[in-house]
Length: 269
Image 1 (cartoon, one colour):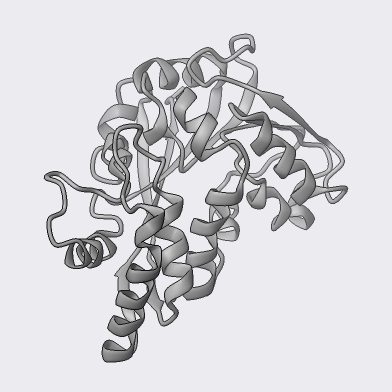
Image 2 (image 1 turned 45 degrees about the vertical axis):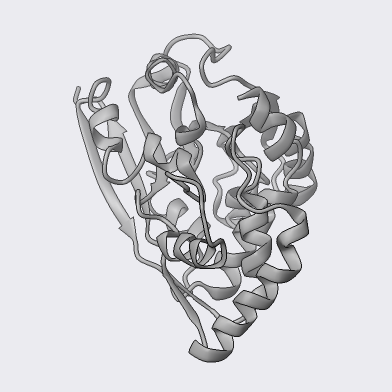
């Protein structure tokens, strides 16, 4: 994960490029962060931990819905991401703290948190079994763990466009190969090793992309996702931009299915 911290998540710049594509071209107009928060069980005096908080958008967009008596810790393995989250959230939430945390070795006592959230991040974790075990350990006996991810076919259409552009793409080429580590299709099996009850809720969405530049920015934001593979070199950017612009001119839009999934896990007491 040190490679990701150095090249992919040293700050939120590349992360934001991916968020922007969904924000601008998503057909589901009810924002994903609001939908996630809708599905979080509410209560009084809860202790809440988010692991891999990214730019803090989940909390910024729900600031006026968060109970004042919640105690919230936002954590990330990247100090740069935490710095950006602090800037995004600003003074909109006062009962919140920020910590650098490694999900594979969570520095909190057993039975500490009522709610733990891992939003689009478990697929990055090399030792996922250990990470989920750590989450289960620090979660209270009646606590709930919320984990989000995508389908294993996520962005398949974008991959095909890149393959069309590159006359000889490398074997096994993928835009974001880590998704298969923890996806809508295989996440439940991994979670059920530690939790009695796991349910999956689907946020249905698709992208109707009619501008090339945000598409290009998304693709290039994934360049360092895999340490051993470069999707497109910087020297290819102009040619790829013209290729995508031509495809949009001919087809009006690029349509990309983009469902997200939310796993809700807890023990039966």
